[in-house]
Length: 372
Length: 127
Image (cartoon, rainbow over all chains, first blue to last red; front, side, top):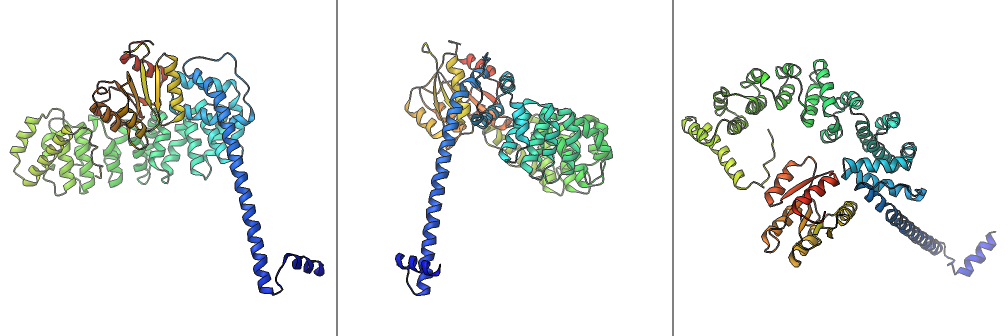
């Protein structure tokens, strides 16, 4: 054996010196690896091109059928969806569903139902490929497939946030009422889920979520209440006055400010007025803003008093609240400005009036982001 | 207006562009599609105005607000009706679209029949 290796080495011209021989074999190994890598790149490119060709063929076959369905032409018969076409079809279908609504969306559901894709999507939920599970969850959500509920619930409990949030979205699409009861406590609990995602998912279940939140608020502790109120704010749902009243009176700043941000009924004017002189300036800021939404004529005097607050943001929000009061017209505000004896109050009202003028002069200028 | 009204569709989403083109051609409109803001800008500068422009807000390179500004600043184009496609939950975009000079807007996700009805307000024939 040793002799035959020696003969091979001699034929290949391997140097006799061990160090040079090691360098020779290292070079040969590197060459082989480079060749293998090159072959793998060629294989991947060929595979990609083949996939693109399959996708092009699938789209060329199915796009006209889906387009016709979207505009109201229900095809009497559908061709068979080949296994190689399924993923490409589902991707296109999901994309169109995300961009269309109403009758067009129903027509797409009709096509998918006739092709038996609800069964395919349920099977895809159980597969290992993450992209297939995501597509399946999206498809089942658009289809409103009630039978997929237990599978989606399991997917929603997974650690992968994209998979779980997509599954939660599908649950809301399938049954907003049942999803609101399941998801609202979960979303209050999971502080790590971004509010924009939570709001996006719950958007379709606004009314059931409001009902669940109203029932939960009296039982929630101060550590969970702000998150619950922020969900209500993000969804723009109105909570019953009695459910908000105790949060408005809370001693915790986070609870009181979250409640003040969403209060939108004159029934709670007194509860808001009670926070105008709170020790915490953030509470005073939100109380001033809230009074701008729900206050009456008697609140002008209260807001004018806040124009002299020691905190800049309170003065600024009080001035904005005054300017936004529907019954105070520009001449009224000018007259009010003339009566202000406090220099800081007069300056602040003048600034907000100037901002309003600038905004009216350049209506497409985006307003500055709110920080308080 | 010619016998076959012309519509310029500016939409970067290839699937939605196909749907829009299919819908409009089926209604008898002659459709020209451009897929990004830069191409739209060049098209506006180099071609006569169509009967209507259907313009997406979010476009690569140059956004829809800027395109509508260019349309309104150009003789021959400035009176062309422009309908903008804006995303849901972006009321600010809708206001900006109208302020920039758009005649109307459609919110995505959209209903094809609603879109066609809005178009018909500006194009009397042939649909």
